[in-house]
Length: 509
Figure (cartoon, rainbow, N blue to C red):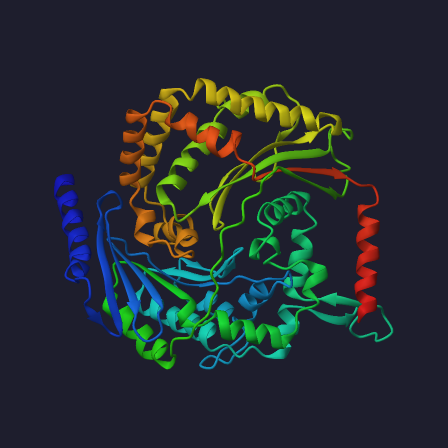
């Protein structure tokens, strides 16, 4: 009986994928041109990459034997100020649209939908609207709500004031009470920046990649949010939320043609292609190391009041479109950091100099150029130079001795096993964790799915050159001048300075 069930599963899987294998490069389907069809056996899926002829919108369909179908539309949003315009726009688009003019149709769907996932999110350089559902009618209802919200939102000034910011009496019923800033995003970002770890992470990204969009706060810095106008919000929508700047993703066992027909006939055909340059350039590389110091609120609950300093060393690495190089660096990052036998666990945590690794420690590939940070929090201010020296010495040790082969093998084996584990929302995670960041920067989205190809290439590189990993560590860490040493320490007057700044902002208005 078990054997029969297994055979049935394989046939079903084949039928779902076979439905899209009929497409050939150049085929025309409901206003789209098929770019390529690629089977990815390790993930039991077949991908179809398409281009919308009239608008230039990109579409990736992942055909897989999974009834939990997923969708997302993503826009590359690259603000050049810290007013939080993409974040506030993300909220405001969900406050009613041309076809659904009611207040908060998105949240009304939460109670009526059979969805297994519904959200909207803003990253440093993209905004995404994803959902998943197992019911086709529910999927199509959600699709209509989402697409109408992003392409034809009402963007009322009242909604901007509600979701973004406004000046209001502390007690709305008492006009003599003090004026204060309010707003959903404004209050949300105040909460974000009340956490010292968030302050630190934001500062590291802004300082390591200062020349373009990563040098600002895409979510919004509270004191800058109040500079955003309703007109600016509407202009940002007109330029960035256009099909020419969009990437569509569909996943699961629902028919591709039905998706394409609905999206094209009801939305994309209403637009023409526009020229908009939202590309993020590579960060100009530094010729010497830089330092950045910031302050934070003292922690009254700290186990040792004298140990509240954080320090880390961050490196800018490579363009994430260099897929194999990024894969290699992610392996190196894991080998350096993961597990109690890893070099940095042994050199930084075992000596008990600090309480834990610093925020942002590890490899990061969510920006145009990837990065790596390592450091400690909960240290004495007198130990900053000691920690940075330990970091340098640890890299020296790795360059000299390399990594244990059994740790490399175990990590590769873990990657291969991880592909076979299907989580409850595999389609959403595949997009968010595996595709979105590199696809947003014009990398072929299928490249991010072909993990086995990179594992095999990685093994081949190790076989050809036993010093392969050591040379990479030397290149990206020992010889890399694009290096930032960041420190954060408590300031007893931090809160007082914040209140004075806020009072100054009120006086502006």
